[in-house]
Length: 77
Image (cartoon, rainbow, N blue to C red; front, side, top):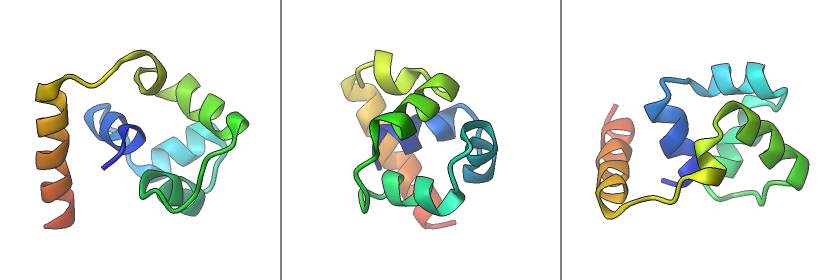
């Protein structure tokens, strides 16, 4: 799981919510989160204006561990 997805999840946002706030499609955001697409500068600026932690907060070891746990929860439904 990457930082965009991690901070989106801990912010309580669904992909649909982030899509509505950024103007980016759910599919495009999903590709960014899953590493299938390299986001453009404007896309990351849109995401960063909604979830600023993506830019300004480095992940601690504890957050990385939590991120892995969240990924397991999301993957296992």
